[in-house]
Image (cartoon, rainbow, N blue to C red; front, side, top):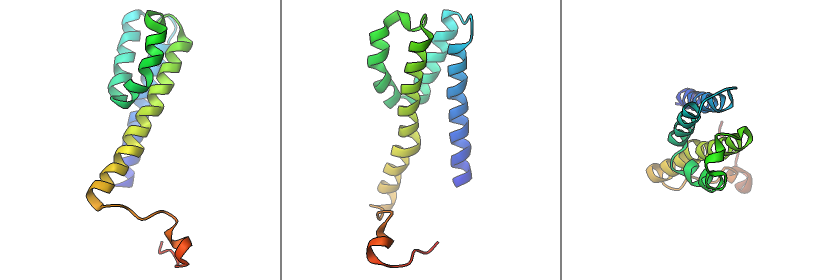
Length: 116
């Protein structure tokens, strides 16, 4: 299962980097920029949308004209999306299915050896 998780992470990150390259590409038209933003919003929804919405709103329509603004929105959405899909959601799923997991450092506080 760990290999599948790494493959999913790599594919997700590759799609995010593709969206960034589309935004950053010299001479990209407005339609290309819109497609990249839509792709990024789909990859990171709903948390990435919520995190990037205030920044997108503050830049308004000028986000497509300013590459730095587009990269800032991309970075914020990517960080929130990564946290959502690969940290928070798996943790919530494990807690829901298996109950509350033990703390990672329980073996240190009890003095028991950790089975590896």
